[in-house]
Length: 88
Image 1 (cartoon, rainbow, N blue to C red):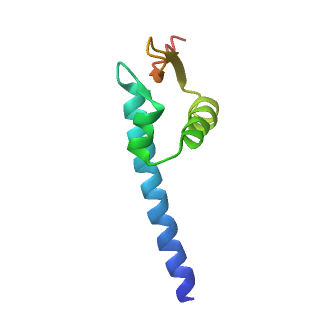
Image 2 (cartoon, rainbow, N blue to C red):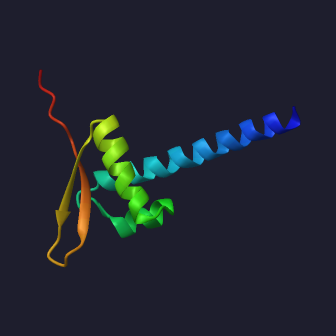
C-alpha cells in the first residue's frame, strides 16, 4: 500500500512539471517573433523531436491551435501561435 501512495504522488509531480513546461512553451509561441526549437528546448529541457511532436500532435491536432512555422533569413525555423478568428 505504501508504494501505491508514492506512485500517486510521483505521478502528480510529473503532471505538474509537464503542465508548467507546456504553459511556458505556449507563452513563447505567442510572442511576436515566436520561438525556435533551440529556445523551446531551453525552456522545457525536451529534445527537438519531442518538441516537434508536441507542437504537431497536441497543439495542432488535439487543441486545434493555429501554429505556423517560418524560416528566417538565417535559416532558423521559428514557430508562432496565431490567434484564430472565430467570427460565427
